[in-house]
Structures are given as structure tokens and as C-alpha cells.
Length: 129
Image (tube, rainbow, N blue to C red; front, side, top):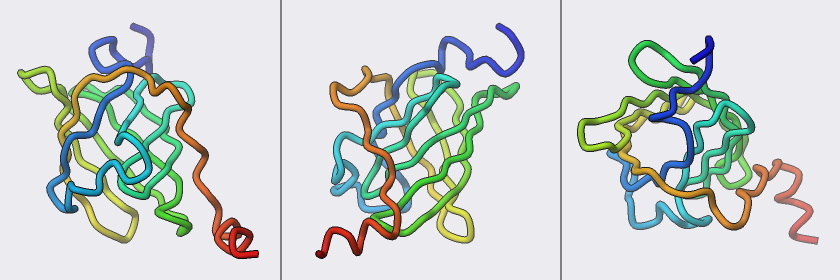
């Protein structure tokens, strides 16, 4: 493994199953809740959050920053994951100047349809006209 490369046991797509802070009934509101960790063009989708992810290998797992939109509000944050003994990811999301939550994810395949780009605040007003 070269410096910064995502270890093979983390690399790929992960289905977010649950969070500790938010009601999980709506986790798939915009499509299946997913996080990709490949080191190239990674994405995050859960609830009404769509985000671009930049991840880095650490000594104990993978850390990442993300930037996107919660509905039409621009948000960003950080996160980290470790692989549990059961093969699931145990992680934490942090929203800059906002909430944080732990989460659990299991390995998944790449979605058939690409995750859309996060909308901009201007898109909110374009859709009304």
C-alpha cells in the first residue's frame, strides 16, 4: 500500500444502516444511504444529504472530510471509520458547527445510478419558477 492509499479492507461502497443521533426511518430519503471510500471521487448520501468526500488512510482506519448540501443548505464536515470485528464499519460524522453522530455501515455494491451532485442554494429558487 502506498502512502495515502485506502486499505483494501475499507475500499469500496458501504451501506449506512443506522446513526445514533438522527431518526433512521428516513435514512434512505434520497436513495440508499451510502458512503464510498476509494480515494477517488468519493460520495456520501443519507437522509437529505448529498456530499463529495475526500478520504485518507490513518493508522487505525480511514478519516474523511465532506462537503455538500443538506436539502439546499451548504454543509461540510468530517468523519472517521474503523473496521469492527464483525466486518462492519463503525464511524462518526461531524457537521461543521453542528451535530455529530456515530454510524454503522456494511459493505455494499456501487449503486446502479450515480449519486447526484449536491444541489446549490440557487437550485432551490430555480425549481420554483
